[in-house]
Length: 143
Image 1 (tube, rainbow, N blue to C red):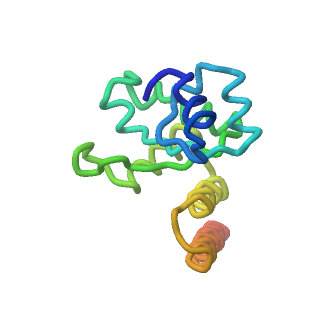
Image 2: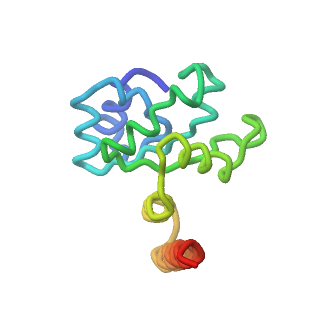
Image 3: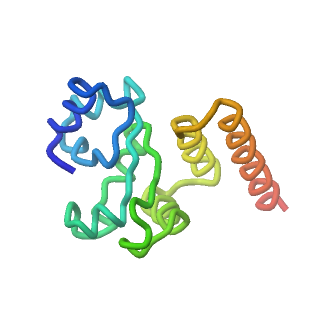
């Protein structure tokens, strides 16, 4: 939630391999390029970021810019009860704001599975479920 330097320090000093929020990185081109190059995951929580005043509205949130830049973002709901949102609502915001396709949404969820704190067998099961969802959704659209 701090300035771009705090994102870089989290990686360089603390050895973080995943950043919660980190949305200030959008204002630092070299840091943004590093996040893309190193595939550092950013857990992005649009509603929370708006509610705590980092952005004036969901439309001003940089989730679309992160996606277009190729940042390894995941979508999270932060504190759903406090923020009055859910992961489903946050994913809907991301789809709308970044104009994500079904395939994009599947990829977004695969990214989340890849960086989830879980065992490798559980990760494979989760990724298979995301793949099955994406396949079923595409099949329904084709009908």
